[in-house]
Amino acid sequence: MPLTRRTLIAASLSITFALAPLTSAFAASPQPAKGEHGMVVTAQHLASEVGIDVLKKGGNAVDAAVAVGYALAVVYPNAGNIGGGGFMTIRFKDGKSTFLDFRERAPLAATKTMYLDKDGNPVKGASLDGYLAVGVPGSVAGLELAREKYGKLSRQDLMAPAIGYAKDGFILNQGDATSFAGSADRLAKDPAAAAIFLKPDGKPYGIGERLVQPDLAASLAAISEKGPDAFYKGAIADAIVKASGAKGGILAKPDFEQYAVRELKPVTCTYRGYEITSSPPPSSGGVIICEILNVLEGYPLSYLGAGSAETIHVMIEAMRYAYVDRNSALGDPDFVDNPVSKLLDKAYAKDIRDKIDPFRAGVSQELMPKGFGESKETTHYSIIDDDGNAVAVTYTLNGSFGAGVVADGTGILLNNEMDDFTQKPGVPNLYGLVQGEANAIQSKKTPLSSMSPTVVAKDGKPFMVIGSPGGSRIITITLEAIVNVIDHGMNIQEAIDAPRIHHQWLPDKVYVEPFGLSPDTEKLLAGMGYHLDLADQTWGQAAGILVGGKSLAEIEKGGGARYNGAIDSRAASGEALGY
Ligand code: GLY
Image (cartoon, rainbow, N blue to C red; front, top):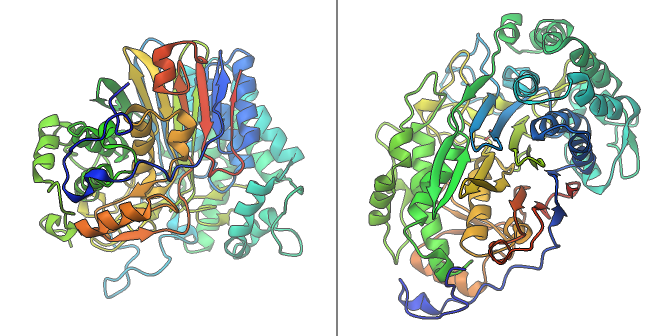
């Protein structure tokens, strides 16, 4: 185990804060779930059961991921979807890996200025609400490509549980009911969405009530029988295009017919001897996680201690520099020449470290590139099978319940992913991200994402599967879980539950979860020049698996469970299930 502040208090980087308090803000966490043959961790307990059943029946981790993807579209409709898109990172048992990009694309008729008024200013809500906000969905094509190429079971077998939950309904628990209640006003604006997700009296479904989705069951049954053509070339696409045309959207049949999944090489890097495999552009996730880890590798984080002012300081500065790169340089690889090798270079990370003042906060405005003018509801699930195939999936409608619209007769909620593009350089999006030209809207382009489905390996074996929703914060949520396990020795549940901080260059603020820092640490950071935004809400819902023990100490000692799963304590309906 690395030397920690708990084991040695001595002079460190700092001056006045050398005796920053030991970490005390972290509450106790429940024990991780254990399994010897497989583990499925999702944000909705019924979907976790679907995944574990697939593994027990002989399906592999990809089969389970496909079945979970369809199940979440029914039982977790605020983010699970077939009307949105996402990413799948797969690390196979032989150590090879791949990445499926089934994220949304801009419609053919999309233009750079489509969300601006005649004076060139963004029209409020235009990229978030209604059909103009909808990108061409990719989930059905992505899940089917994964199944066909890497799965073992039939589409019919994998879709049957989702069809059953849509047709026969499922009973809402507290977490389900809370997410429905939170979006009731929005869903009420679209008659087709309201007819599904609100009761005849206009109220949202409550705890113990059953949600039945017959139209969605019929759409899923058509896909199960005929494959993705039922979605992209048949009646479903026709219905979505018709509704879009009638309600101010620009989706056209060729948008659906031309949709294609991209299979890409994942981003890889090393951190203190661990091998990270994560999402490449059009996600910024993997690149920016690696860039931040490369910077942090030069600091003795385990010695500085979890939650200490020194640790928080270097983490914020690494985040600040990396998010400048994220927001200014990255975009869809078919349209932009992404400087991935530069951003992943350890020498570049050293240049950043050399610029970090050990005693003072940086200033974001000073990092403004030349020419540069939350959870928001995504969901992540992590799966590993008996052979050691590991799958991390993050997929999304973007905002909670997406654009809040359903084309009549389809039962399918549609995304508002177009908001992830730069509407206008310098103007913040849903997540407060201020972005540049590389992520400008273009026909058929994919908006830059932060989704970071990640697999970490050690000595050629899977070590950790991790990811989270959280919009622009996905990157720091995933990063902090990795650092908490590797540097701070937390078990997988503690690593996920620990309070979070976040910085994204602009606005120049450090977001801190409730009770994330002790008052002493807050004072030390404020004294260094940081603007702390002490949030009254938590963010993210990470889902993780650790292999060989629940923590690094247990792995090193031996004798831990083979698979150790943790769903974020912030995820009210989720479950980690092992067998
Ligand atoms: N819509 C959130 C993301 O892709 O980053």
